[in-house]
Image (cartoon, rainbow over all chains, first blue to last red; front, side, top):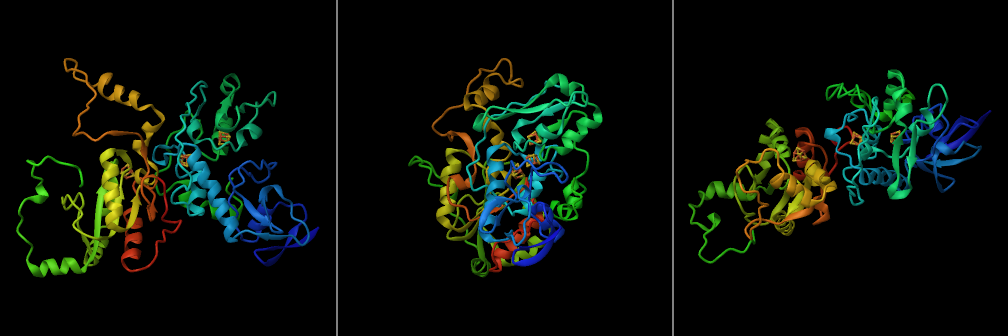
Length: 234
Length: 210
Ligand code: SF4
Ligand code: SF4
Ligand code: SF4
């Protein structure tokens, strides 16, 4: 069923039940997101897609549109909130982009550019995080994990459906873990899938290095905004 | 700098110098005054500054670069419109000099990852300082075997800070140019805007963190 909503004051029609991110993208309005994957159940973990819905701040990926909904995306207060959320992620982990295999293909980095982040307003924390080399197929560069839980939910053992990744601990003690035995059973395709799915450079395919030259990397060829609007970025 | 020195010491900038001819001096004085410095970094950002290529020539019509690693001037000679700073804060001397830049510059710009958040030198922030010293001076695999192993410590040596800090955690910074290093084009865009009285505006297409 087709319904009417407004996005930044402009009336648009949408399919009832579609989420705000998709409806906005269909109408040429980009909403940054880091955990949402089109076509997969929404995780709602990163909150980077926060917008105002009838005046209240909500994560756009979690909200299905409804008749008459007033959605504000490029409103200054919520725009700055999204930027702050991205800045928090840069302060929380250790993101030394020049030494990161994902640089140029990284959704966090690309989103930082889209929200015009020059520096984080929060103190950089420099928390020591140990790299996990225990599996043969994957390195976990924990410095870069943003706890989006994409890997936890979407990458599972092909035979049993068991989770391969999990988050242990809470708050500042939270840490991404990998089941080494299950990881060693992963096919090269699934390893690549996991490393591509990770929005940052945390899940590193141990057979993959810096593959594309600077200037030819994924988000340099086409920005994350353009990919999101074309809905092809995954 | 304000570093206390003994009465019988003469610093190079206190030595008598031949003044510039008045015409050249007048031309320089009429320009926008810029001071530059590199703290704990690799000078890559300064190389990117040179990477402005012919853009640099146009810029130099408008600005006069005073203290910098390229002019080898050791003091800020007066009130500056702009301070262009590369590198993070890693020792007591960096702090002292940064404060001097803040006092003497109308606008300070953090240039490059090291200045903006700590960058490559800040990789030591996740390791205790004692361990860093031990690795560098005591257990260093490249140490000369017969040499006495000491961690340098002397009143004339700056004290190393526990962690490498971004500039804005020490003084107020007005603008930030990320990148390691930023492209010459990004530096040119920012400086050209500022010297021509436009505001800071680094578009997302020119912003980069690597
Ligand atoms: S994960 Fe992304 S933001 Fe973090 S260091 Fe790598 S490229 Fe940079
Ligand atoms: S490892 Fe990657 S995909 Fe998994 S939670 Fe961390 S950032 Fe998300
Ligand atoms: S930001 Fe990069 S290029 Fe600039 S001084 Fe630091 S390490 Fe060197």
